[in-house]
Length: 144
Ligand SMILES: Nc1ncnc2c1ncn2[C@@H]1O[C@H](COP(=O)(O)OP(=O)(O)OP(=O)(O)O)[C@@H](O)[C@H]1O
Ligand SMILES: [Mg+2]
Image (tube, rainbow, N blue to C red; front, top):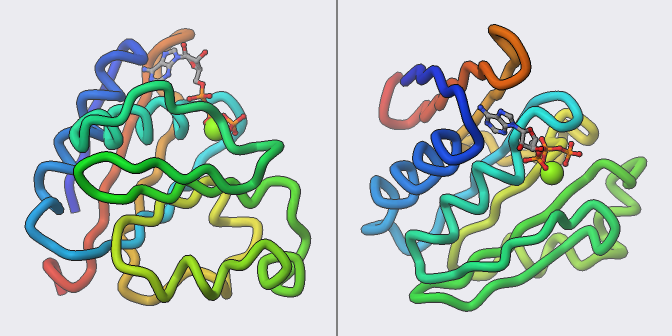
């Protein structure tokens, strides 16, 4: 597990970019993001996508799924407005899971059963003041 402290959205983006670099030799990965509203999950994904040449990342809160084609495909999901696994099926979740590429999922705590066991778990918490954040990255297969 790695832990980082950030003090601006740009610093959180940089940690996202660093994770993308670390995963870039894998054909696919599932990144499950956890943390309260406005903590910086989308900022983290924005940095992750930048590594693959994708800019203009927007929150998928209302669209549920955004798909980006950079040097790799990045699927960005937000489970906030979903209730259960049936809702997930209706947005085509199984098809997204089956495809190669990267799937990043905000609000993973909403439907815990949907998160693969081998997911990389990113937790973001508030620390000091308005802009302090603690980011932990847990990659179980690498750190048994
Ligand atoms: N250290 C920091 N890291 C990330 N964002 C920060 C930080 N400090 C302040 N912010 C601000 O916090 C907000 C984070 O917004 P963001 O949309 O990334 O959150 P989120 O976790 O995706 O929220 P939601 O649950 O609504 O999707 C932005 O307004 C950003 O400017
Ligand atoms: Mg978000």
